[in-house]
Length: 63
Image 1 (tube, rainbow, N blue to C red):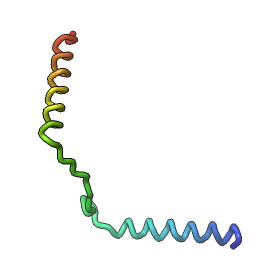
Image 2 (cartoon, helix red, strand yellow):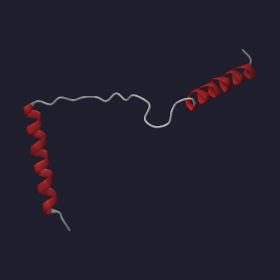
Image 3 (cartoon, rainbow, N blue to C red):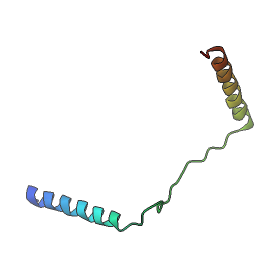
Image 4 (cartoon, one colour):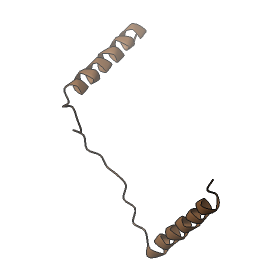
């Protein structure tokens, strides 16, 4: 395939994608997938302990 033809195909594809985007309604029309993490009671206790340590650090280092 020639370089000119390749450039033309890329421009056509880009223009097609742009026109499809403009056809979408404005606002939150898309779907989002978010990961879900489930923590054990032991892991939750570790988080709480770390938060307590961080809180103590802030109390000692407030200026």
